[in-house]
Length: 245
Image (cartoon, rainbow, N blue to C red; front, side):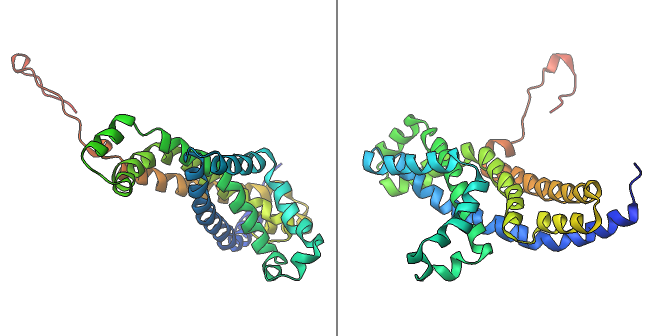
């Protein structure tokens, strides 16, 4: 089957209109979910059962159920409660946009919390003890020792979660939001040409995630000093050979 290049070009331009909404959903959800995840991670490492227990239950529920189901429950299910329909949150819950943001934020918080927790517990105990021996307060210890080391450990895994969140915005199309996949579904219903439309949509998602991956690679480079230190090798004078780095 030959591809219609003119149709591909027109489809690609149409799908570009959905990029701002997709990026907006991903950015807001990642920021909100990240803040919630940080609190959950602190609850997990607190050592207090009454904090750790609720955090574990939250993480179990949102990691154990599909994101699509969570979106449907928030968008379609919460409207069944009359108390919510007459509360101050209803102006938000009746909008598909905010329902998608809430669902995406709650979902990514569960995954990100475990990533952050893994980074926090990976900090060597010896460095923490050395900092305490130097007289550091708990706040200074967390800011100067624990957090920087944990960030280096968790950044690669967290970059994967952000990329997954960018792709998960496609599910927002199931509740009428016209982001990239929503526009693609509309074009398919009008043209009956799913192959060309999804090729263009896939190319756009691929480009977005490539940019995100490169940004996180640069961030990893910035927060990892040893990667910025040029490697050196010693020369052997007797051989009179050049040293190659």
